[in-house]
Image (cartoon, rainbow, N blue to C red; front, side, top):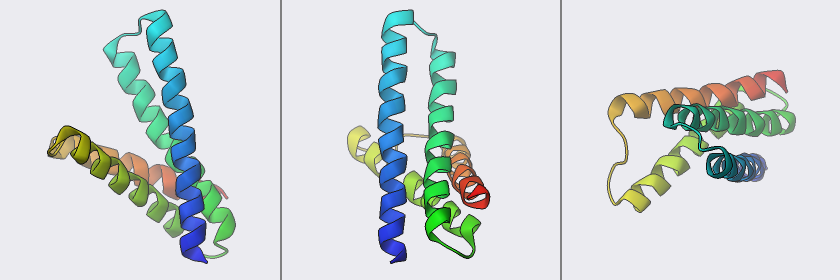
Length: 116
């Protein structure tokens, strides 16, 4: 049952990610946004998506909600890195960026789980 809830939470996270990335791409096309603003937008999308996944998972898990939210964030991160490795045909980021992204994803998921 927890695996099904985890998959549902991850699906919600990636659905929100897709929608927000489409909006960001549209804004980039129409407004000629700077690279710095796009980077901030991507960071915000990671955090919001993992937060939503943690929130959904926390509603399903009656106990230890923050841990389940953290696990959703970690799953989001692992899938993100895995797809990036496949697309880039190698490891796509340096170690510092990797740790920062992991912290954002797991933190957002844990926070969503706590608030649920």
